[in-house]
Length: 94
Image 1 (cartoon, one colour):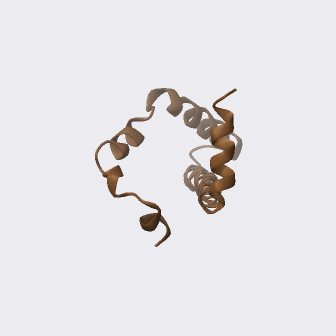
Image 2 (tube, rainbow, N blue to C red; image 1 turned 180 degrees about the horizontal axis):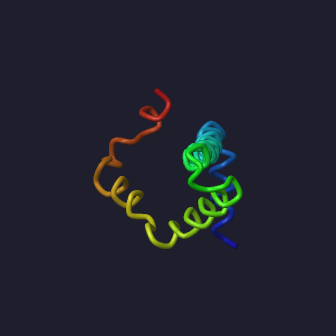
Image 3 (cartoon, rainbow, N blue to C red; image 1 turned 60 degrees about the horizontal axis):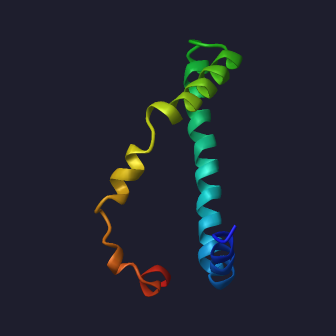
């Protein structure tokens, strides 16, 4: 439980960064909803699948993708694309 205290201190010390992270998470959530809706709308409008089957199909493969695809994209982006020594509060806020 000792690791929780620094996290809480960081949230209190950096409310703007906490706000930005929460906004980014909300955006990712809504963006995912729109992507799913677009893919479902395509197969339903072309009558390839019924609406119910399209939702089941999308839910199944979105869940399966977590285990098959993994974190390769995040690792690629986080591996040398940004030099962390240049990321300072001045860069973040300005």
